Image (cartoon, rainbow, N blue to C red; front, side, top):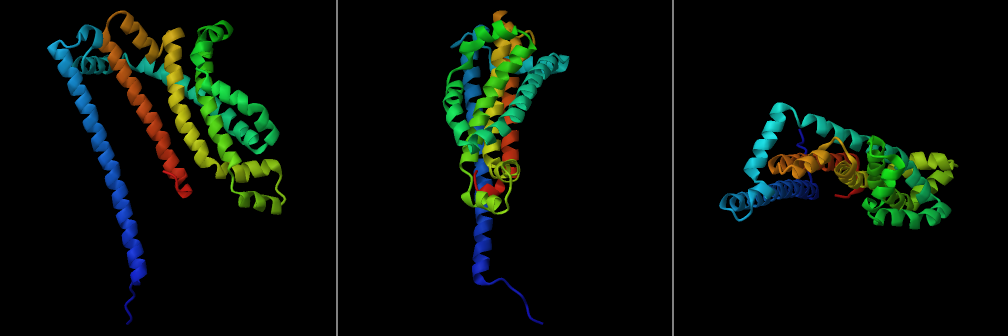
Amino acid sequence: MTATHLSPPRVRTATRTRSARRRRLLDRYLNLVLGTVGLVVVLAAWQICASTGVVDSNFSSSPSGAFRALVDSFRTGDVWSPLGSTLSIVAWGMGISIVAGIPLGLLIGRNRVLYGLTDPLISIMYSVPYVVFLPMLIFWFGIGENARIVIVVWSALFPLLINVIAGARNLDPSHLQVSRVYCASRLLTLRAVAFPATLPYILAGVRQAVGRALIGAIVAELFMGSAGLGYVVQLKTSNFQMDDAMSSIAVIAVVAIVLTRGVAYLEGRFTFWSGTD
């Protein structure tokens, strides 16, 4: 009976692969530990400053006070209604942005004339802070839910568009050559070639857009909302209930982390073949 074994080059390759995986795992846990330590240090310093009177806790709150307010909001259920309102606005805005932004970005990216016509406008709309347009948006759409959705779409659409356009313009020429060899139509090329090839760009754009969508929702609630986490922060701050305001800000921070990390996870799962981190 002949024993089978890996040749030395294959053994070295497998060893290097396992070592690389271990290094990535260690780096991931190291970053998590360092981030946790940094957060604990900041919270400890804040608590010490509030306890010793370096800062006035009546105006700056404290980690312990914010934590008690957070526990109370979950215990009484007061957190769920504003949280649901904010998440619903973000979901509507992201849904509209994705449905409109991905096909529009693919079309603009693969059409030289459309790209030339829209690139300056997209750059301007992305660069100019949407906050300066709030008075006009209030005049056009009022202060209801529609206005808040418009602001979220404005916040999320343009980073997504920019990423999708960049991906469509950087397609591998060999992919396009294959589609031409098989006489694929432009619509089929966009659906079967451009969309899968630009998926890393699309998910990177979604990751940027979801963070900006949350910011847009909070800003809209601060200025024109009657519900949502941003409205709660504004209301509690104006009443000098700083512990409650900081607990709402903590909920916003957790939501932001969950959304961005969730999209980053999907990005890693669906674009592992692209070789990007």
